Length: 108
Length: 205
Image (cartoon, rainbow over all chains, first blue to last red; front, side):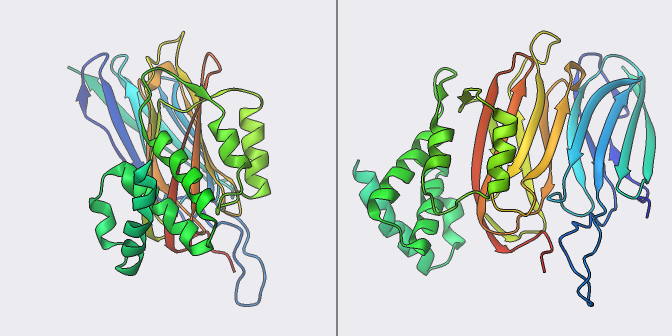
């Protein structure tokens, strides 16, 4: 199961040098691997294990997540605006699903 | 300290009347209260209580300078009512190694009471210039009671601008949550917060 369409919120425009907040939410079961089904079989772990944010190819933020992160993982992080450009956020899950979204940031 | 003697009575009251009023008290007092709450449940000796509360009170204060302390080691060594899992101990040792731990500077915000352990909001952040020469590189979020101790590791760069992150975590049961931040100069900061969990998360069973 590949993650569904994520929602990312960041300002449309910002000043160079300003630290902006980026909020990212994605729908995902974040199956822990600790649960068993009705027949007593262990349900395989399937979580988003890595989230990365790059701006113009440079790493802004990376999160390595464990099964202790809630379903539909939400992250709010920051970026010091170096100039106009493209923010690329990627979510990777255990099933090999990768969701990549791109957002344009303009400067004032 | 007289305060130590007075706190248990308040706590018993808080326990009797439920937790509704606890959120209105000052942070330091509630931190002590929640700790006492656990201890009451486990009926530990009063002497242990006093030591634990004095720890809680001290760690709730802001120190003037970056005081390096071995309180983390002491807290882990103490037979507290919330004995960390062996998995936590290993993860913590792997992260911290022999580094000294700075108690002041890293903030870890979690609710003191979480009815639903499946969704517990956290915010962790540390003051840093976030320059190429001096920035926070990693923040680890650890659980002392969950089946998996390592909840998350966050990586920052100078482009992050600010070493702060918020999200939502699972807590299997009442426990202490630990955050450790590591800077580019290899300085280690630690913060901790006890969370009382109503219905546990992590989907065990």
